[in-house]
Amino acid sequence: MTDTTLTNFVKESLLCGASRADTEKVLLEAGWPKDQVASALGAFAAVDFPIPVPKPKAHLSARDAFLYLVMFGMLYLATYNLGNLLFQFINMAFPDPAVVEYWEWTGREIRFSTSALFVSFPVFLFVASKLATQLRNDPTQRTSAMRKWLTYLTLAVAACIIVGDLIYLLNSLLSGELTVRFILKALVVGVIAGAVFAYYLWVMQQDDEVLAQ
View (spheres, rainbow, N blue to C red):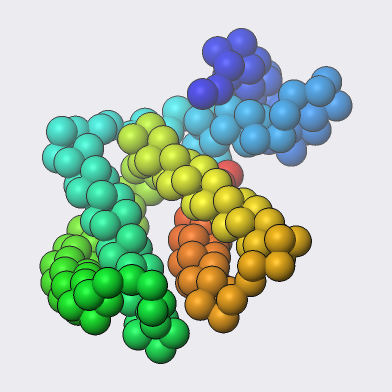
């Protein structure tokens, strides 16, 4: 959230005729973080008018909150079941003889994860496409607090999974307990979590670029 003092300063600076570039330069020299400066400047439209023109702020409706919760919920469900499905294929390729009723249990897991993917992933794509269209039509929705919180929560979860995956992989290596099955499962977790992290990090960077214009 942008500091009120900073926003007021930007408003007064623009009102006195200072350019956006000069205002940004002096604030950065004063020690203000670059993202806060960009956010404060982004609160005012870059239009030719005698006084600073505020940009409209995002209005979060119950419908938007519902769509974001459904989208991220379906994302978690789809990624979990994709990982579980790949795990079962790895189990089939490298079975564990110590597990009783191995093939029956693996078959149940495959059927359930496949069913979950067939439902959750199309729902995720549908809701994500609706929200993407909404963002194109109304760029101010990029400032939605619900969207930012859920996106950064997803980034945090993905980062924790990646770190945990690397820790377990390194621990197994040092303990001499690495197996082909373990390595493949670690790769599955790392690739899925890494893909989610990279995508939503790119989304946040795109938001910053659009809002800074």
